[in-house]
Amino acid sequence: MQYKTEAGKLYFVTLTVVGWIDVFTRKEHVELLYANLRYCQQKKGLEIYAYVIMSNHIHLVCRTMDKPLNEVLRDFKSFTAKRLFEQIKDNPQESRKEWMIHMFRFFGKGNGQNKEIQFWVHGTYAIELYSPEVILQKVNYIHLNPVRAEIVVEPEHYLHSSAHPDRQLSVLPLD
Image (cartoon, rainbow, N blue to C red; front, side, top):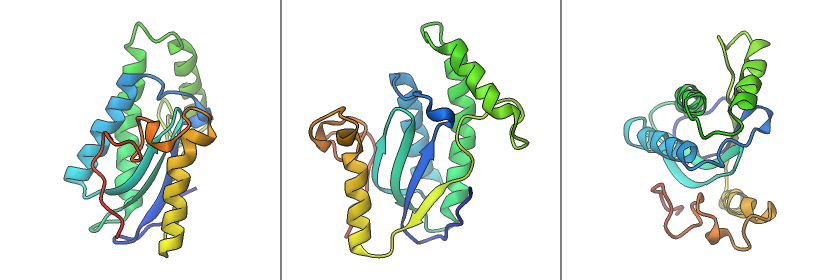
């Protein structure tokens, strides 16, 4: 499902790997995500206020000022899907490689929008954040995601989150 977004508005966004496949358990896959999110920040005007990268999905509180957010995220997903698929396919150390390739091809087969594979669930799940209370609720939801998953006890202990003191992405303050 595609949610329309407007430039200048703040959104809570979820990007999910098809079949909830745990791809982001490998450092090189997470690093590729970071590099491409940074690229979107620098070249496409993506403003990130909070984030978490879980094993099979990403949550962001973000916006763009010049174009609809869903266009920037569509390009991000398209680019990262191709690169991540190649990274998985070319990695001799990936013990789940054959199964993951099979699954990405399986999900891509029944979908006319894909030529060979599908990596991300289609569309961008985006909820407009219209008040300070809703913004705080979504930021807390994002930061507590790894706590609810029982990966860490405190949000700031999860490395791939804006709650971590040494976060990997620059985030803007929520005023």
